[in-house]
Length: 303
Image (tube, rainbow, N blue to C red; front, top):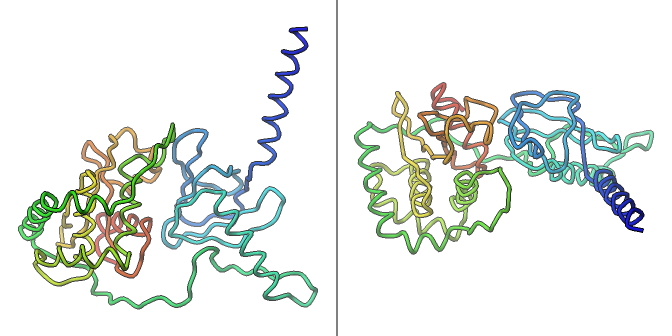
């Protein structure tokens, strides 16, 4: 009797596992342009994505500015083209793509009655984008950047308790490897910089210590203040040409780079892995700010 029960338990487990596998969303990479990365939950590390590879719903995709990605779902349906800058779970991309297809079916049909599929980005996309001057790079002498850092440290000391209440709390995450705590906190706090209710009060506090009135520098300084109040180590720095950016401590060592990226150009390594951030005032997108910060440090100014 015990043998029969044991066999039944094993068969039930196998059937359950098979059912879960069949129900789980998956996609195949049809086309990829640019250094698109994938975090494979099963392996717990990042790697560059190649055409023909399979992805599971729990995997994560990170796309740099200008990247292009085309996926085919597990039913053989081609999803609309995705473009950078974004970092999302594959399951979210599938949902966005399918939603886009459903909308297209109701919006326009080709002559043979088959719904037309265009190659516009899925997800949040707007053909109208606020124009930004190309003179957006804030330059300061090194001593002024260091003085601003000291002033922000004093603000952190005075405002820590009140500002900390504005920062989203992070729930217990179990055994999740990605994102590591500092990176998750940094990405959540980034949204406050574009919150029309919370941001103005913080900006008013920071403006009193800025050496110049500048929207880009203001957001970097407010971000530095928020991160400091949340206990995340960060520092305002400047490139060789004097352009100001923010360097955030990922909390990881150099040999742990695969836990946050496969692209070594996205981090600054000095024993610790530092994340460079440069904020464009019209782009409320953490992934974009990360890539642009890395590009600024590596290559210098250039939109």
